[in-house]
Image (cartoon, rainbow, N blue to C red; front, top):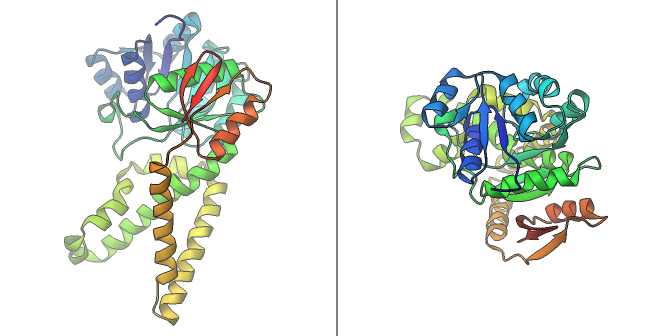
Length: 323
């Protein structure tokens, strides 16, 4: 593919490994590095280029002017940025970490010469590691790309093209807006799933014998490795506290109503309306439009698109195609 950047993926777990596969399948030059010998060996056996040292992977990225993708858990980001600063300090840089504010801050402090565009694909499973990934993981998934005052729009376009090549659709957002949203639709569900799983298990063998679809569906993400859940939830502490307060307020109201009147009508109805809002969003027809990525107000236009739930589904020269 002429005119597109190669891709260097640091971290080859579920998301990083799927990204390496998808980028390669799209025709891009792509290689990776991981500290996991299990994932490295598996990726190599599957025919992918895996460098034995992070400096080797990043030197290659600098030589080929590649997009460097950070695909490690939040606690490992600073160490990864130190290596990037040493060996590929001016590359286009993105990430797939599930919180954006802390990564934005770390990049500004630790790798200020990179052209950074924050990213987060809203895709995954409760499984982890190279073996859990696939090239099709991102098909039609929402993939947040951050837009800030400091964002280099040429770099943003390069990363956007990579995201679209992986089969995803782009939702522009600020780092703060992203973190507030995922606290409610990702991090709080992980926390509630953990609580629900523990409450059910506390009921003993009879409860577990009777556990069916509602319990299995509600606890699915509790099967995620605990250290990964802690990293993303604790890394988004402020917004998650707000979401937990909202949930506790609603649970408190439900308990009060159940104790006093025996009715859970308001709680159940509000929940059903929330579920219906999601279905309506997913089935709604959205107008197609074109955003001029060279216009002076491009940042504001992109953020407004994301705020109203719009997505970018293609690129055509200087224009982003929405739908």
